[in-house]
Amino acid sequence: MRVNREDMLELTRRMTIARNCFGRIAGGYMDGEGYVDGTFNTHFQKLSGADKTKNLRIAKAVPFSETNRQLKGFRFRPEGQGPGSVWQLLMALRECELKNDALLLSLYEYIGERYQPGFPYGIYVFHGNYDIPLKGSDKVQQRESEEIYSFLVCAICPVDGDYEAGEPQQGFLFPAFSDRAGDIDGIDVFSADGNPEALMALLF
Image 1 (cartoon, rainbow, N blue to C red):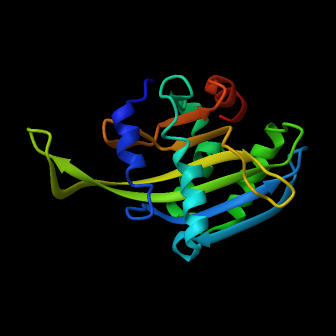
Image 2 (tube, rainbow, N blue to C red):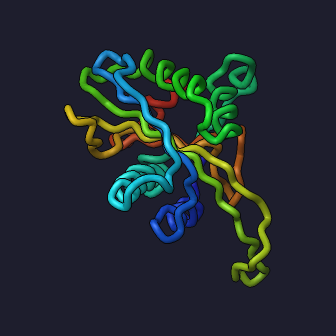
């Protein structure tokens, strides 16, 4: 499933201080063996200006990456969308807008069981709402909204001893954003090394 670059650029334009679409940020700090070492969960607007800028840079790295190489679209199979599936977990996290710490811990532990790079890392999860403006036949944006796209961005970054994040190495955008609309059966998976297929096979 190809990712449209223009769709991703449209999203990243809402990932700035002035036009921020994120309401909440949460995360888990993991040791090199994939065990949770600490967590956080806060309203995005409660961050300092410097922390907002730093975390927007982390979130933006996923959709702003090289489409169809570092960022590729995949679809969940119907059998992978049942009770107890990671798809169901992501849907629940989206619905609660990251306000359920138990669900978040389940996500961190799920990733930690499968992703063990041998060094400490952070799992950063953002929830956003994008009020998608309608476009007229001449492609000019109009004021009325056609859909509110409620979504999660997850970025996995190496961290140092002070929990300072390095550049995102893996991550995903859920649901997928395709043709200016959300697709709950799809997910856009990011890998800085240009192999998102490996992460898709590992986690989903």
